[in-house]
Image 1 (cartoon, rainbow, N blue to C red):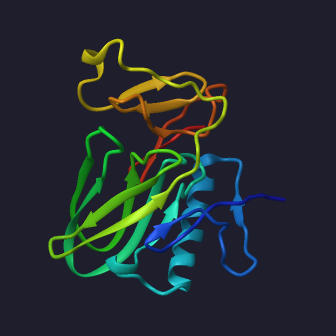
Image 2: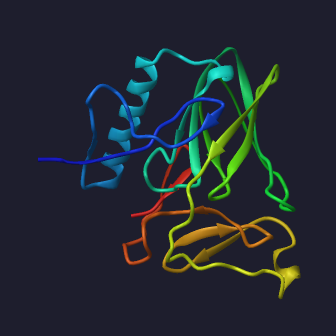
Amino acid sequence: MKDYAQGWIASSDLVKSEPYKLGDAKIPISPNIVERQSEIEQYLLSSYAANGQSTLEDAYIVLDPYNTAPLSALALFETDDETGITVTIQGKDHAEDFSYQLSAPEKHHEIPIVGLCPAYANKVTIATKKQAKTFMLQTSALPSDMATFNTAAEPSVLTTGYTYIAGFYRMLVDTTGEVRWYTSFSAKQTLAVVRLRGYCVFS
């Protein structure tokens, strides 16, 4: 018998976490992480289709889609023409904006959103060649057992970009010491990186 796990899904201008809702269905979880991701992916696509295809204006947004990276999200929507996508996450306080492009032109879009700040209403702008839409993505707080960081002592070390830290949690920290990505898998588990839709997933 397969185990099942509860995920989180939301879609609106202010995106908050709430349990997956697709009838009474639960997400099947296989012991193998690749199989598990495939099953969740099929669930998400089925849920997206069941709710009707979205445009950029009402993009279907899933927070932490694979239950592995709480400061990430996935946006699904359609465009009339093939277009590349630019994602910009507004920096918190004095942190710089984080912007990246998905240049492959598509009509069906499954956009990874990474670099969100924890316990914060993140302002995320998704732009096509013709239009842009800003969403507010509300994230949860960091785990209580996660370390905090002070970058003031050595400012030259973190002048730009992000620093990868591998401790009990694996994470990315910005120049202000803010955690912008982490995996909910602990370092006690065997590390195996699987790249799927731009996400780094650890098991």
